[in-house]
Image (spheres, rainbow, N blue to C red):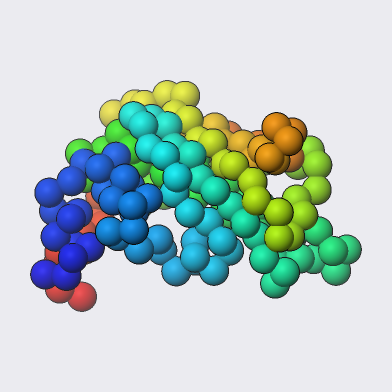
Length: 156
């Protein structure tokens, strides 16, 4: 069993994400590509750091809205994952976005995700992107379902 699977097998969702924040577990490849990292983990709460690089810019020079949607989706979903008995990626059922200010490539932003409702099957969470000056750039609300099929200890 590889190290990630071993940590997963003995950790709650929050513990697994803390291991990710400490570098014991790698961030998923898509998160590394866009410059997303886990910074702090609580119960129903996560803080991410996001440093979008130049390749994420649209023709207008700002970070493309699709990447903004992706990191908000990830942040809200990871907030939900903090409440699980094991880390489980979330399946997004619904995601609503509000784009407020442009996101500039090569700046660093805080992303904060917080669970608003934790049901037995469906969770609802909010996420927001905030600049180092404390300005809100975008926000999202989504509903999520834990992916019960996820198990990194099973052979592929």
